[in-house]
Length: 475
Image 1 (cartoon, rainbow, N blue to C red):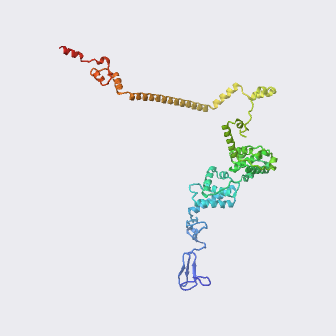
Image 2 (tube, rainbow, N blue to C red):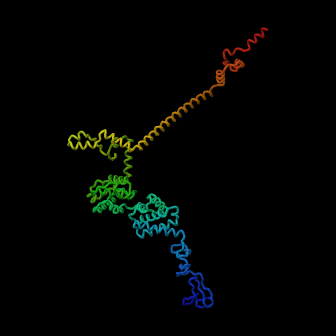
Image 3 (cartoon, rainbow, N blue to C red):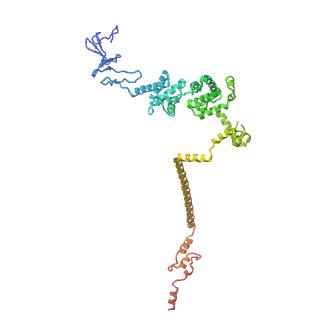
């Protein structure tokens, strides 16, 4: 209760003498002793002295971003307490690492704030579980750079953190898919001035960069940029521009700086060579704007393949041997005839040339030195060749044995098949013919079993007891 003046009034006695105890958060009436309020939340900060003279803060601090108050964890000796929950600790460590990576890449504070908001979402969605925090931090910062369209590439984070770029790329793609972000491919022109400064172009670096920008714009109109990574387009444009201004540059010079594959740069240059802009001089390219656009490289390549397939089906030799249809070939270099070449040369030059080539004795000496130096390698190669020959011989022998076994099995099956097709009479005849004739068997009675009586053994058909029968009759 409060009066019209705004001060508290005791509801028991109506007294205005109320004492506020900030440490305990209680309000007590000094007249009647009634406690008007207790355990109130206060905003003032007080400190108390503990053991050993150490001071500690009274109360609990609640952060603006925390979900619950810190629990008092002060220890004797002056060490601070106030432990945090795991989420607050993770967010604090994430922001600290984001600031460290941003300082290495010279990124401003708004990149840090944007990346920390993304990191907070990653923590809420448990994306950091099972992954290293530094990988998630790099993914958040790279997304922030892509959204702000800065000149930083993913490989810059790989160099700064000494982490494999494919590992960071996998984490970035999964996090982007989780958030459902649609990040547009950056314009290759953003990297022109950055990497042109590393080509040692002296005072013409600005002119080369301007020409490279015009090349990028022409490549956009000729459908070379569409669906391609900006680093490869930027490398090809810088290489063509540097050569156009008279600088002797090779694909390795730009691939070393932009960290792209040499085949990618060569492919982009060849695709640009197929466009009408490639036939213009440097002065014409700076003044003339071609209205026609070239077809996309993939479309042109597929049309050529379709034409070749159709020519093969129609047996059109003229179309197959045409120039828009065949790839460019290098001219065959003729062999050098040293005899004709040496006729018009002075004798001293001929002697110098002869000293370049070795005679058979020197070749034998060099071969002996090579064999001695590479003795271990030669022995290993010889052993490998011996093992290979032995393995081939063993394989041939195994195949030969397998063939012989197959032939034997086939003969056995044929012989076994003939035995099944024979009749019972033939089997008995074969069995008896292979055995010795016995006196105790009446072969005539046995042959009478068959109609034709073919079971006869010649002399064996005589009755063995015929002599005894005649002797009995005579008696």
